Length: 408
Image 1 (cartoon, rainbow, N blue to C red):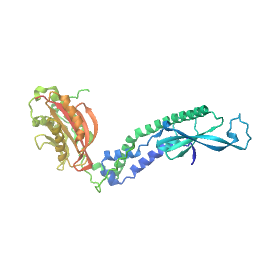
Image 2: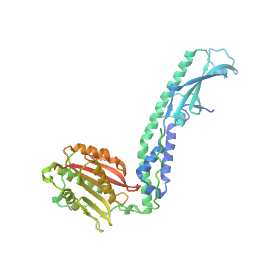
Image 3: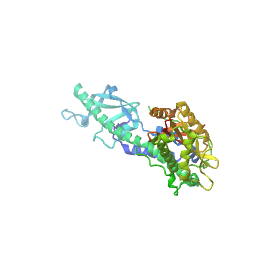
């Protein structure tokens, strides 16, 4: 067994830097087809679970001891002993065995904050051991020395854990940034990037008649690597995120107007309420030369189309409970075909207990089979999510869920 210095052989920062380098290198080496087609959320979750550095655990409550006789060189004896230099003497040696688990490599790493202390240990299997020479047959003295060593070990361990936890807490953002950078480089290299956005822009000449009221102030488990069956990558129209945000904000402002002036909108049907959204959206956004524009095809939907496919769709429905709400999401997903399509579910809630409907929507949305993740909460009644298209987790779409109190 090799003798080493506990928490004293390698800087922990260099160990963590090497781990980070391996993570980022593995992302950079992804094949282009895989990086462009894989579900980003699933891949990041897999990479994070794979990359987290396990903490080292030292089980001080499970320490046990053994003893043996060894020849001890004279220079190791206290000065009070009369021994001859250059000779060795037989002494009883107490070996303390300390069980450990987790990342055993950390046992040799020096944390950024540290005690100026270390000692020799032997590591074997799931434990390390250190020795105390029984010079004076004084059990209390041996126990004190053992306790002092363990105290120093546990203090060093706390510093190691702090460094590792800080490293782990930053991993997700670094993995996400590296993955997004990888995708951007691929798209730029292939000339795809410029062809992804639907050429739609905010109008700068909107009539004041259509101005929208300003909003009110208010054990380690590694996930399996996601599989990609799609070969190649075809650029698909995608509504720019900033335009999507503007559309949602305008919808939200109109929905809040419904709530502020209930007498004007009471007893309106879904179709009539939907038309108020269209009245605001149509003049505020310009389509491109290929004719993208907001339009309607049924009683309840708001569409933005590009080459006969929907890049944005809003579905307006009266709230009829959880089952109907989830069915509306399914209906909406059935209309979408492009990767990174964007949509909104707009619920008009006539119930007196409006807050209960909001709570039901928030708590049940993740029960939908196509749900991927919650993104953020823009307002107490506006929540953004990611879903996937039917049958393909790698084709994600963004859906905003927006609820407005419209008593009938």
